[in-house]
Image 1 (cartoon, rainbow, N blue to C red):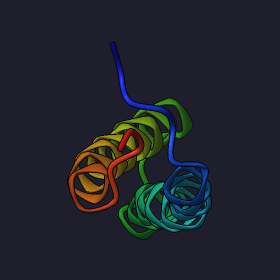
Image 2 (tube, rainbow, N blue to C red):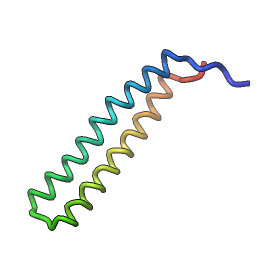
Image 3 (spheres, helix red, strand yellow):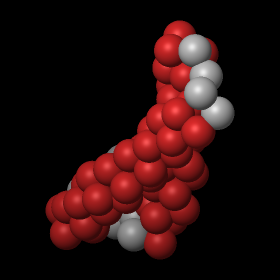
Length: 76
């Protein structure tokens, strides 16, 4: 049988996910937009760079949340 959910840790992790996710994905997306503009890339290629950087932001968020869940376990 699984341990009950620790709602304090769950709330903390949810808030951290929102805060850090907004920062990492937003920063990554903005970096892709800035590089596309800086190098005067064609619009479709610049959008591809933005999407690529945005996905990198989601990957960073995933690894961050995985590490945070080890420190603040949801169950227990």
